[in-house]
Image 1 (cartoon, rainbow, N blue to C red):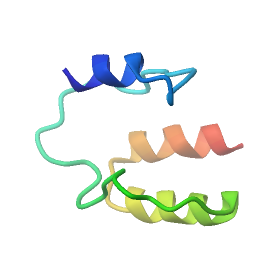
Image 2: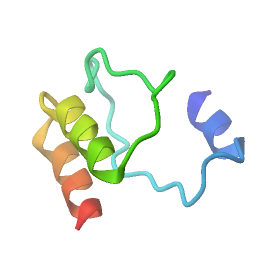
Image 3: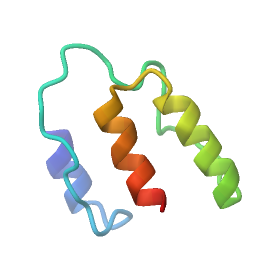
Length: 68
């Protein structure tokens, strides 16, 4: 199970489940975590917002609230 693997991975901390509903299609389209280059916080936020562009409003709100 992917979530169990993420929880065990020491690179992740303070993990919270924002939404546990079943997705019938990809919420983030072609976005992948693989090989994301680090960058300034603002650059990362812009990339995240671009990835969320087609996500459901409830998902976008979760990230908007976390950013404030």
